[in-house]
Length: 359
Ligand SMILES: *[C@@H]1O[C@H](CO)[C@@H](O)[C@H](O)[C@H]1NC(C)=O
Image (tube, rainbow, N blue to C red; front, side, top):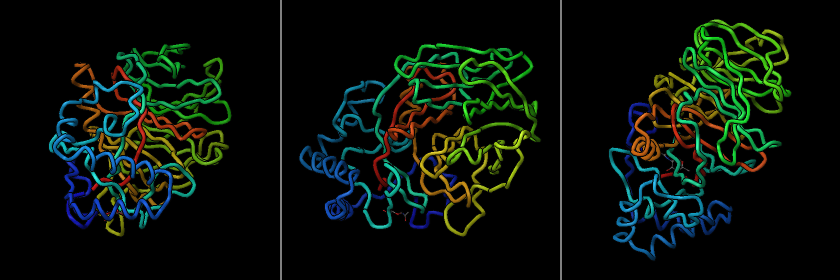
C-alpha cells in the first residue's frame, strides 16, 4: 500500500510498494503464533524459512526464479512465491505477512481484510490453456473437474468445456459471427453467457451446450457470476457498476445496482472498467480492464476489501507467450477453496493461493 491512508491513490498505483519494517516482521511472527489460524501457521513456516535463509540468499532466490520457471510440485512457499510488481520487485521470501489483528478468516480459507490491503499470493499449480482463446468468462464445475469458458472476438466467439486436468477442449459451441462472447455464469444447470454490445444473453443447457433461451439487457455485457445459493447473479458492464440480477426471473431483472469503490467512506475513487467476475466466499473478485490486479470487494456495499497484484504473473506469461493479452479470468472451486486465474490468449491457467496481507 502506498502511504497510511488506503483511500489515497488507491486505484492509481500499480506498484503496491510497501514499506517493509523489520519490527513489522517480528510483530507478524508474534501475531501469527498467537492466532493459531491455519494460514498463519503457513505464514509462520514462510517467515521461519525466510529468517533462516537470510535476506541475501532470499534475494538471490527471488531474482533467480521467474514465475514461468516454477513447476507444479514446488512445495516450499519461498520457491512458489511470486507477486512483486513490475516496477519494484521485492524479495517476497523475506516479506512479513499479516498481523492477525483485524483479519477474519471465519467462513473461508482466505485472509479477510476490509481496508483494501494488497494480499500476498503464491502459484500452486499450472494447467495448459488454449492461447487462441480470448478469455472473457471462466468458471469451475467440480462434479466433472472441468472449466466452462466463454471466449470472445467477432467470428471466433465460443462456449467451451475444458478439462481442469490438462486444459483440453472437451466440448464447444460456436456463436454466430455477429456476437462477441463475454461473461459466463452457471445457475441451476444452465449456463448464462453475455455478449459485449448486442444486449443479448444466451442460456444453454450445461451438459449439451445447446442454446435453450435468451434474455436481453441494456448497456454492455462484460462479467457475470452467480452468488450465494444461486439467489442472485452479478453483472459488470465496463463501468464501476455491479448489477444484482434475479436469476429466477425470465428476463434476469435488475434488483439493484452497486458502485464499486475504494475502501472506507471516500467514494471518490471509483473502481471502474470492471470485467470478469467471480463470487468467492461472500466477495466479488473482479478483473479490471488493463489492470494487473484483482479487486476483492463486498457485492452489497461495493467496498474494496483487498487486492491482489498479479504483475509478476502477467510478466511471466508475457515472457513465455508473446501473444498474451491482459489478465482476465477468475475461477473458484467452492468445494476445495481453489482459485484459478488466466488471461486473454494466455497459454496457462494458474492456480493461486492468497496468503496474507502484503507489507
Ligand atoms: C489493513 O488491515 C490489516 C489487518 O488488520 C493490516 O495488517 C494492514 O496493515 C492494514 N493496512 C492498512 C493500509 O491500513
